[in-house]
Length: 161
Image (cartoon, rainbow, N blue to C red; front, side, top):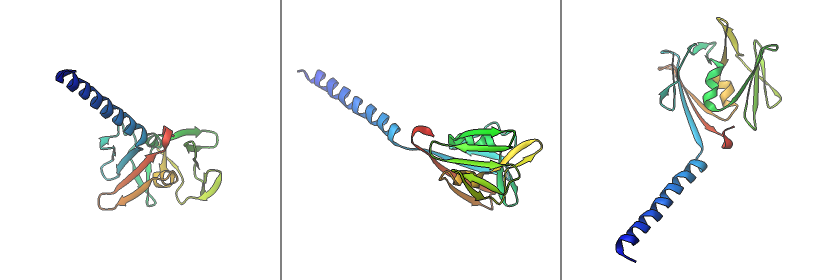
């Protein structure tokens, strides 16, 4: 076999392994969502990118950061709104969190859990206490008072749900 042919063959084998390793890494590595909510500047970053559009900016209510329920879509959660009961249900394959308007309790996997701030309606729009909801899905949430910033790190479960 000539040197050129060996070189090309070796190159193709290396290319195959590098490509297949990258594809495999994408399948194995969990998808991490980094969400930063700035209540002072009414902005939201998701994995470093502006979350658009922000029709209704986040705000603080009774010491809790309230956000539009639509923001939860960045975490690949299923969202269901029941207009009759005024409840919002978030779910994955293994977890269900349900909050009801003006209720002191929420439901997490069918168990009643006290909640200090329920979801509320402001100017005809719903807002949810993001920390309560997303922590029940295993996210890490931190608050930086000087920046009025909530940072959420969430690992999307295998299969995306």
